[in-house]
Image (spheres, one colour):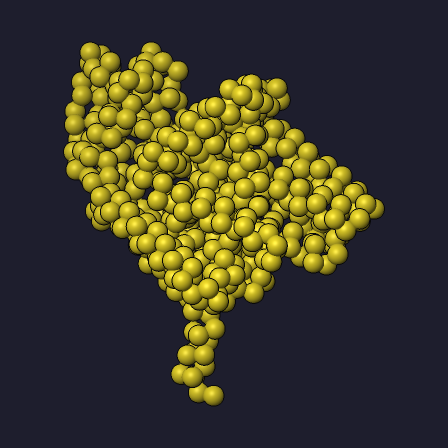
Length: 486
C-alpha cells in the first residue's frame, strides 16, 4: 500500500478527530492572546504560579491574596511558565492543550459506545461550538483542567465497571478525584455522580461485598477536601476555619436550601436563558430530555441523558448560587454523548434523523457566527506590540499599579493591582509610581472605591505625566501615567 492510499484510508477512519482538531487549532491558537479581554481570574491564578517558578512560593504578589488554593492547577500552570516563560499566551496555551486532550477523551468514550464516525464528527463539532468549549479552553482558568480530569474520571469509571469493579481502576478513580477536586471544587459534581453510579451497579448486581469500594472512594474524597482546605490556609496564612468558610461559599451550605434554590433558578434565567447563551443551553437541555424517552431499548443513550439530569440536580442541590454559572461544562457535556447515540438510535427513522441533523447543524452554525462575531469585535493584532511598548517604559524595581489583568504585561516587574494596597496613604509612601489604566478598567470599576478607576484621588499630591496612550479594540484607550511627588 502506497502512502497516498494509507493517508486516504486513515482519514476515512479518523476524520472526526482530524477535522475536530483542525477546527479547534484554527479557531483558537492564532487568537489566544490577541482577542478577548484578560479576565481578572487569569492573572489571579497565574501570579502565584509564576512566583512558584521564581521563588518556590505560591504567594500572590499582584492582588495580595488568593489564586493559590487550587494546588494541582497552580502546579500545572507553573510547569508551563517554567518551560515556556510567563506570558498570557503561555497561560492560555495551558488551557489550549487541555482542549485537545478533551477531544481525544470524548471521542474515545463515543467509540467505546459504538458511535459511527459520522455521528462522532457531529458530536465533536457540537462539543466544540455548542458547549462554551472555545471559551473554557481559551481562558487560563482552572475549569479547563478540572473538566478534562472529570472526563478522565468518566473514562476510568467505565473501565472500573467493565472490569468487574477493578481495584486498580478504583485507585485510579480516587487519584483522579484528588486531582480534579484540587483543580476546581465544581468537579465534585462528577465525583458525586461517579459515587451514585457505582452505588447503583453494586445494588443492581447484588455485589454488596464491594460496598467497601465506596467507603474507600468517600475516604479519598474526604482527604482531598481536607487537603484543599489545608492548602488554602497554608498559602494565604489564614486559619483552617477561614479556609473552610472559603470553600463552603462554593456550596449551598452557607444559606437555606430554599433561598439558594431560588437564587440558582434566577441565575439560570439571567445567565443561561435570558442571554445569548440560550442558543447552547436550550439545545443541550432538549437533547438530554430526548434521551430519556429511550430507556427501554437504548440503555446507554438513556444512561447518558440521566447522567446529565442527575448532574444538573446535584448542582442545584449542592453548588452555591455564586458558583452556579461555572457548572456548565460538568453538566452539559453529557448532551454531546446523547447526540451521537441518539443519531444511532434513529438511524432507520429517516425523517426524525433529518430533523435532528437540521437542528444540530443550525445550532452549530449559530454558535460559529456568535464566535466569529465576538472574536472579530475584540481582535487586536497589535495588542502585544502595544504591551511591549508599555513594558519598555517601565523601569525595573519601580512601583507599577494596574488592574489585575495587566499583570501579564510584565510578570517580572511585579505589577501590583490597586487592591494590593490597603489604602491610599500606603500608596503615597512611594515618591513616584506608574499606573497603567484603560477605558475598560475605568468603565467596569467606576463605582468601586478600591479600584484603579479612583486613582484621580491622588492627583492633588502628585504630578501626573502621561507617557503613552494607545487605542485597543479590546481595552479601549490604554494609558501609562507616571506620578511624581510634588
